[in-house]
Length: 240
Image (tube, rainbow, N blue to C red; front, side):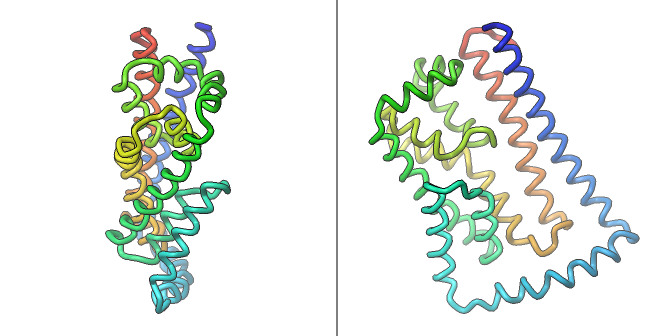
């Protein structure tokens, strides 16, 4: 058990550090693209993206786009659709502020569906899940504050699927409004970042496009290391 825990601990720390490193590599690449030699070639690439940008801007009925995005979130409850892609689509179609609002609404819709789905599945689902993740079981069987912190952390890291976490908290009988608030709190940095990425997707090596991606990778890496420390602390180890 100790060797298994040690392997998990080192692996999560390594993944966290890799995510942070990827973030800084993207930032360095963006800075490199500002060099004149690369900027000239990059400008030609941007010309090819202009037509798609103009086509999206020319769509007359934005309400239909909002409905389509909500349908994508609805489909996400059943299909393995990357939520990052849906957030980016909203950012491509709308100003960042409105895109963030649309994505928050879609995220709440998705979380609500899976939360009550888990509530319907009941304790049997919880038992099956906790049998697979012994460290998580110890946290969820402890005080409420640990459950709250774990929920926020799981929304930050890229490891745990949104649907599975939602079903788990629903099946545990966790308070719905508290669950929604903490889920938004944990996932909001990603929603904002992906919405900004979508807004500037037609200039992929600009700082406006890359910085949100850097933030996502760095935050995810820090959150993964933080969850690792949190799990060890909650299990009474005190150190990695």
